[in-house]
Image (cartoon, rainbow, N blue to C red; front, side):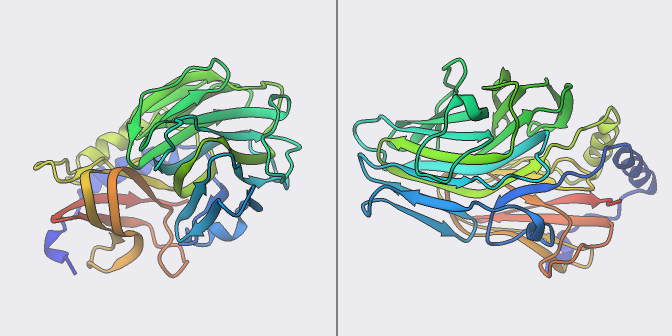
Length: 360
């Protein structure tokens, strides 16, 4: 219980502003694919899963863990996981999110990984051609414990990142430009047949071309074709992209006025503002561990101090992470609309953010 840490009740006019901002938005996003045995409420039951996990010899291994996938690759081997059964209906715009880290990359430093969304993929342990790929994103392990993301069309690579990083990959095949709630807390635009790629709050690629504008997004695949070492994926999700609206700024003003956006004061914990807030579909919350390892405990509580949903618990290494809450409790049932509190304890630090859940 931590009732004494909860701020006072929000003013009525702020909740009215929040309600207005939320109702102005477009229909809810849907969970398309998930690899998270911890679950995301009832929405997980209707979501697709990876079908096949493959390695080319017994020297390598893919393990599915509580919240993701761990891949150990031996030099000369190849690994993949895939979903070749068509997603139905095929999404027209998606947000793909996952936490990723690399370690123990071999001395050859030649490590090539790629994510693909396309059509007529196979479940074989092999890469797919560009001719059947709508969008692709590469990952290059540039050092023993660091990686860069690659624009597969132009061959550009982004900045170097270490530790666990939260990646957001926005892909638009809707036939028009779309706005969306970006990880930086702002409303951003992505063009048709274009992609935005974020690492935490940093936009690595802005409105870049997809591989095959005439294609579609039925199948998904990840392939590690060269190199050696370990890659860890956590909380892998693909959701339909929810379009933001011009009134999103009103919701941001309301949320900013609710005392619930703590920022790091002593450098031991870095918490971003939960966004969007208020929300009706899914809220995302980014945090960072600056160095070493820290015990993490993140949950959502009601106004009486009772936990309604556990989002993350256990030791985590230095890096940037992201968790989501979709309005479901630990019991798999949707909670009532209203005010809740997200409490994050990392190491000796603890912060509380007020969040407003306003479903349809």
